[in-house]
Image (cartoon, rainbow, N blue to C red; front, side):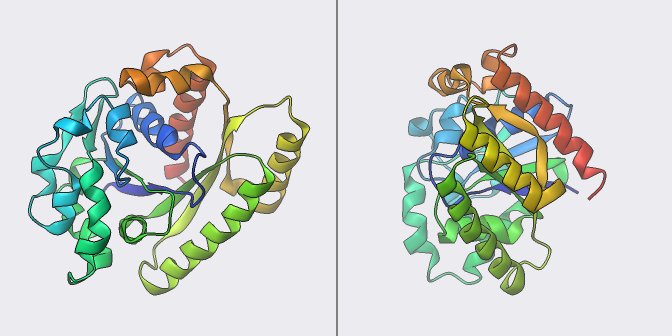
Length: 256
């Protein structure tokens, strides 16, 4: 059975999509069968996987509405070595369209039931808000991976996200838990980042992943080429960090 994880943070610009795309590629490099689901109407994970969102005939939007089955919409990211359930701007209308549908919070869970046995990992790139799309992701996930910068405002946003996860756990998905916190865009030269990093380790203990993703220009360049960072420049520090993170995730699964 696939392990289903949301990559989530209610704060924008914290590297969610970069983490989702590169973790998918990093896990694929560990010979894992991976499906990445783009649940963000911006479609950045789709473009970063080398698939043009403007050319899509169907997307995760149709899957959520039940007018297409997931297997028929899934594409292959040749550069990343994983499968992708893509998204485009149509998905922005899902919030309104889902409101009147039965079991609206579990539409994604129902759609995934037919394909999850084909994969070892399913990763869901959630939008940076507590929307019905994010709730759909959290309702079908076993756990949440939280990418975050080591800054003061990020700590405030983390509190809100943890409370959201607790509410979903209590009301909609009793199996949901936090898998771990991933420190991203880390610059060891900044004292504040070192202090916040130490606070996270002190407060969350082994919920903080050992791997730290450094601030890296090659990771930032990769999406414009439609290639995950780990494939764009495998020797770059950021790529090496995400490959290490993929290996750490595989190891962590053995203890869950």
